[in-house]
Image (cartoon, rainbow, N blue to C red):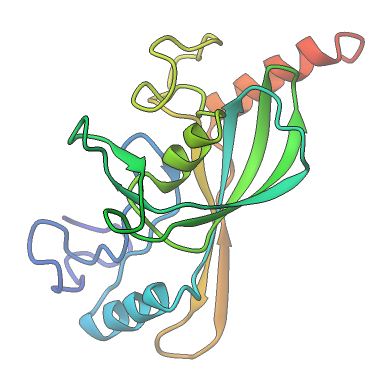
Length: 203
């Protein structure tokens, strides 16, 4: 793996397969990812992840109308016993504690735009938790409807989930740093269409 900003200088902790990768985001999820340039930085960031002090805020478009303005899903996640390729909300003995906090950003009748803040970082956590709440992510063919209820534009790759904000303490300076990533063009296109359908009088 070669990084434009750091050439071949990446942490070796994950070996040659995933050099420098501190944490993962789901396949087809857009947005920010932490990559460490050296082992010391990697260890520091990994410790912050384990201590749940990393700021991770996502934006997602989900099915149906969420009535409450905010909420917390505290439900353990483990391997789905019926399908080993999926995760599922399960009992504490078979899964690990998973906590997702969400806030409604916009409502579109049959769809809701949310911000989700991860307290823990389980595989597919936001996707599994929102599907468990009967609000699967738009475009998520694993945990949601097999056919999307809205036509996704060219360029969309899967679930409408974007890792928008990432914040952490810099391993060397000790200063808190926070980064923001704009929504990809296809995501904005879908939101623009939904706003137009909701508010047809607006241009």
